[in-house]
Length: 271
Image 1 (cartoon, helix red, strand yellow):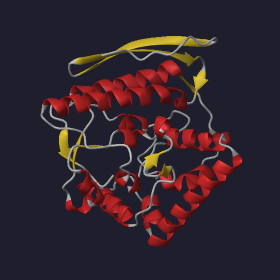
Image 2 (cartoon, rainbow, N blue to C red):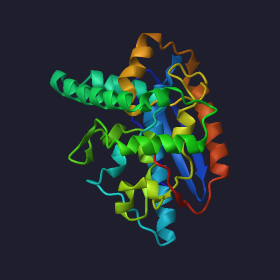
Image 3 (tube, helix red, strand yellow):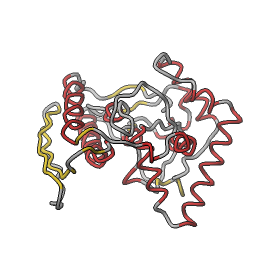
Image 4 (cartoon, rainbow, N blue to C red):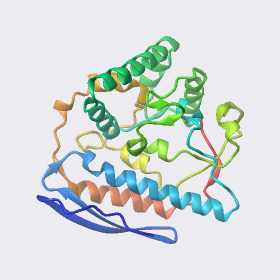
């Protein structure tokens, strides 16, 4: 498999490593800053690696006679609850802050309308109350309740993602080989998806914005403003270096890669 690399950047150190995933080997070369950093510096690498995990899953599915049914312009899954990590929440909030005023105002209004509906339905409070003790069935039920509201992602326009390049890892990992019509009715449990060999979203969600380990907590993309209000960027105080964070990531990646199934197919949850 082709490698992932970045151009030289002054003042940055070069890191190189190889990742073994099933029968593929991915060579990675990137430029990372020295000294204490926020884990967000690794996000572009993780996003590209996530794309590679998708490619491997699709290849494995094709070898089993399956074809990916996800297509541009099909936005059914863009009405599901999308869990994001603190690192992604910060990155998306910063991206929003860089948009032209008119564009930013329009997007924030969509976020506020979505948040208001979640508050009225009780889903917002249920999301706040999730934690390490919340069961998989409980999360699935919350996802079905969310989907029933029909709230489109604030970044969805004409059934297309307008932040496709920086979309959350969970969005990249949601891949379907069953008929697209089933995606509009997740409660029927007829959605058949394919699972990437390593779910990088599971690795990333373990870090807070400082790079420390954090307990499991649900952050919904549509509740981004609330999260930002509770976690202002001025409180981000990085104290771990790129090599430290990278080593932790590589350990988690290798552990998950060891147990990656050869058959990626399986039923999909409501998110």
